[in-house]
Image (cartoon, rainbow, N blue to C red; front, side, top):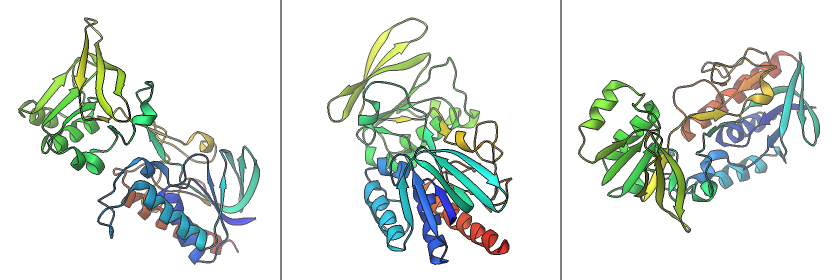
Length: 303
């Protein structure tokens, strides 16, 4: 039996593993896809404390190396269920079952995709999901923002301050974000808003060069040349395997306060999969530390 099993090997999960191991707790980290999480999609990270610039892959590699050097076990496998038996938790995966005194869920969330051919290959090569993270790379360039909600509008305001042009592509007849943001954007000369329009295709070879658009009312097809696009059509938390042991909100995020505790004693949550206002690598790392310290305190209380 492990002291702590951590589901997810992004910055939140790996930080939790580091703190748990420094407290001399036995730790198993389970990850179904990419070790390092979503940060690996960022070609350059310039807002992480202590590093002027680092690629997402490099940051992830450093985190993993640090966790392994402290003696955590890491397994690539897909978690399908977590069951609560009081002081004992059973984590079921596609490769078998593991037992622990506490579980930290750090499964993250995925940005909702457009569902188009070659989309994954363009991520980091013309497709971004974070204007705060990547907007500076498009200074004096032409970009498009896909979406019309608050996130899309906030991204558009930020991008319009440095980009040559920003085209907002909205599939509805109106923008659905805050009126204050709309007022800012309609008065900026380098911002253009296209309504009732969806992206049909992504064009380019190794890098994105243009997007094919289709008007859902008139059927008109157009081609928009861009240096990059920012997709802001929502996020999807990866919490399906845990709904039997935690409470989630209407969007599927695990309900938790800043203490990273869930409704089940001994089950904790960290990072993008929990209810929170800001989802950045720095806040994920913070969550990981807090969740680990809370789990350590819980384990020590049941001895």
